[in-house]
Image (cartoon, rainbow, N blue to C red; front, side):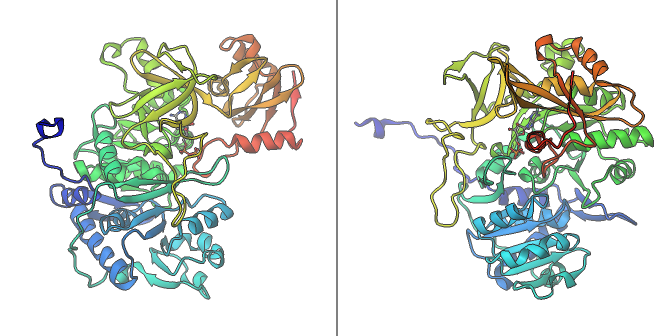
Length: 556
Ligand code: ADP
């Protein structure tokens, strides 16, 4: 008897893990949970998960029957976070097509490149964003249909080559059920391009299976751990890595969603927290810095917000402390477009609870969940130990981690050598250390680390120390060329109103916290740190401004 015949077969069912299962579950078991969309004035728009599910079916009918969307086709969204965007999140993948979320903050040339690369034929767009999209249309030759949702000036689309439809008119009268196809769990469900901080943007294509498994992880108690008693304020855009998985995870567990639509400024955010009383929120640090300033200037009752998830860039310790004082517990997390994004979450281990160690654990990027394997690779390609001190480039692998990039219509997937190892792990471009119990601390991005005389200086460490100074609103540190040392840090600082600190006093302040040889000698005050399309410090711009002599630099 061959080994094959002898083998014990699993007796378990092989049920595909699809987004459709999440939809069916959410609209029935959690049918009364709600998606609330902020409208700026008057009552917010409220829709139950059941209604969302019914409208999702109507949208799928419209896309298939009126617009002729077929399997595998890309349907793009150019939208804020709102109920209609949630409907698109389900209608498109569940009918077998691919949801392509467009990052509306990208520069025009990159957006055009991305739409053409993905060959989007349909774009669902919020009316309030037509001013941004309309000028690009002449270059978007693959686009045949625009579906417009919400208030906005339609006349901006006059003369466009694409056919224009009203979202609500398309849905009206369509059946509220859809015969969703049985999909293979490995079918492509959604795609998102990286924001292209280096080179052309790269398309990451999520599968039904990767989204399903990732959503389960988001829901685990050691990740966000939300239930149907919670309402999450989804500030992280739906166009940025699936809003960190929240629109999917919430339908699995019945968590209510509060969607800010276009009202992302600190004042309306504070108002919606006070009025709608969310228990959780997720966003990048810049949003929280803005909200903190707003709450300091004009205190509001934000006591409902017990937990905030911060990721996308490092959470400065000063920000975490300030939020702790307001009763909002920050949970730090790390991820990237290529990791769906959940990679690590900083929940301290039980033995650290209530001890002095606890805050230190919370400041790390976090611990790897069971499904994300990690390793550190040194400059010579050697694998480094998890000892909390050996720093190397982080590589990861797992069921919701990208193993390649989209190669364009008909093209093979791309596996650039600088992004994927020979054995298929993702090279994250992040440099850090890992402790024996699996906590990751990032010290820098490989391209931001300052290489001074053969030693590495962490730009992030200097920034965090600077931002803990009471006069400093924001600080970004970049490497600049230096004749003697190769590279040295340049500190660019944004001062608070009425600040009195000068460069020498800032340097003295750092001297108590940072090794002397790492202290910057070049300093400049800037009005604001340039930001990328998703609100991260754009150090590329600072490096270029320095090289072009645009910064007024003082050398101490
Ligand atoms: P982009 O690479 O274009 O900025 P991503 O949103 O995919 O787009 O960014 C992922 C990167 O953001 C990570 O590789 C890492 O450098 C950074 N990042 C994300 N979360 C954190 C965090 N908690 N701390 C520090 N850096 C982070």
